[in-house]
Image (cartoon, rainbow, N blue to C red; front, side, top):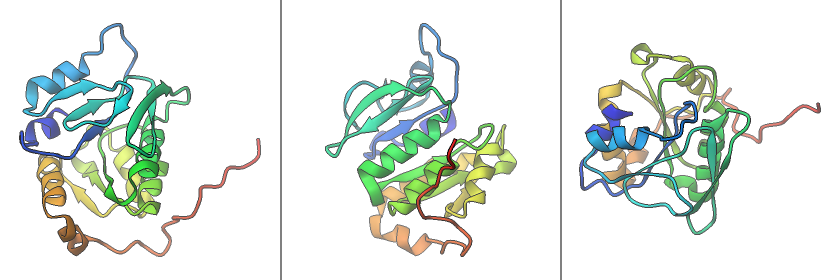
Length: 190
């Protein structure tokens, strides 16, 4: 996350919402760590409108986003924080979402990238070969919803490229594999 934060220019206008699996602590240092590396404003998530800069979702929490783009924060008891945040962002912003799945364990984020894709958004994944924990990028790739696999040092430039020339992203799109399941996710009865 520090590599991406450091690579985004001060004039980057798209809001960045970031979530990381981490333990709850009395003082969350992640916003300060990112702020030390970024030329963008960095803040912890608070209820209210999504703002320009980097917004850090608190540990063990998720967000809801209303139709006007206002965040509300709530606990995330299941631990699948990335899925819930990506789904909320997809529901609120639809085709304007550009999601990036980076290093992490297990498969959190896979259902979220499906939600982003169903809403018309775009999905990038960190190259699993350079991820400290490749499970999350691999799980995202297995959905068939990832358009580009990007090495860590190129994620920030990719975000800039996608947001600077809005119609140009269509030139880079990759058709979904026929087996990629984009329909609603069915849950089995308990």
